[in-house]
Length: 207
Image 1 (tube, rainbow, N blue to C red):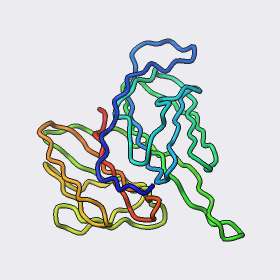
Image 2: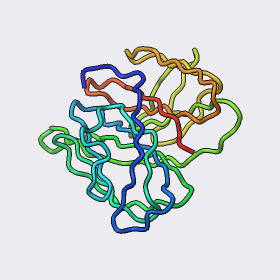
Image 3: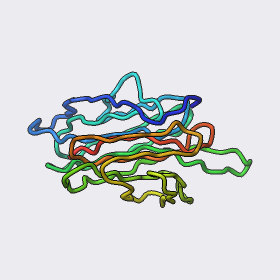
């Protein structure tokens, strides 16, 4: 999309997604839309939209409740093929789901965007703020500047990058600054924007 996203304020959704299952204690999970396209993403659990208006690139739901058990996840975004997956939600486990796109070159040299989903397990909580990076740039490293130091982030791997406070610069983005007072784990998700520049979005990990 044309706008530059350095930090997107997430929406908090507390929803009971049920499909005939026992609605006991809900498991809070998170979702971030790292599909860098102009179209919004529709995320459905058991054929129910989490946010009917859709998620723009970089937007996220920081916490919404899902009953433990097996659920059908499905995602649509513009001309991308619909992606679906059966997901087992376990009690007490609060993963962060990251949806992103992978461009596949076709025989006629056009690019077909395929939606893919990654899951980041919860991280142990320790005193203070801890920052991690997760890059969706398959096949290459993401180069960013964190607190003044140049870092190269491997794709699809959770990498610790800072503690206490965070400043990310580069890639033509507005600098991202964060210095939370609360203890917590924060994930910087890196993804391709519609202009082929690396974009980022920050979300606090649900624990």
